[in-house]
Image (cartoon, rainbow, N blue to C red; front, side, top):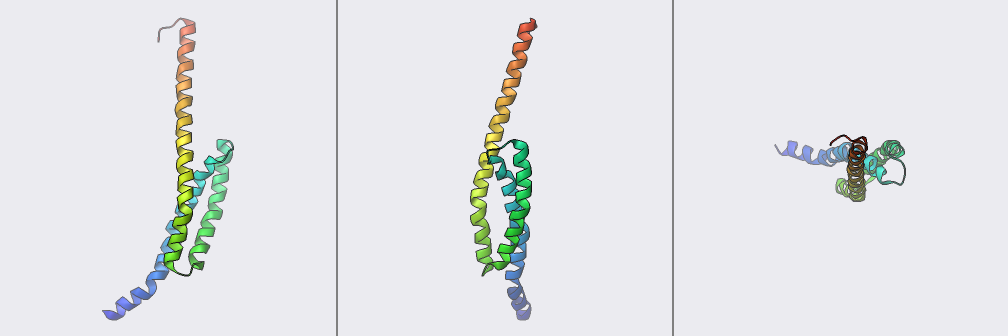
Length: 122
């Protein structure tokens, strides 16, 4: 039992790095993709920019995880980068939500005004 425990203890840092590279890299890529929508450009350009940036960020995260001195530093580095990206992604989604709400309100108001001009009841 002790040999199996020693083997698991020896391989745990590598397994942690692999999980950090796969899961953490994916999370950073997804966050950077959504955070790109916060950039001052059209939504279409923001989506394309975010998709392209996500490949670079994912690759950089995988490289970082295996270059870090320890698995703990690898996870800490991913968390450190994820925090501002999560904030930017949250801000971009809240701005997009407010914009969509305002656009739908404007469309319904315009539709009601058009019906009023035509003399139709609402």
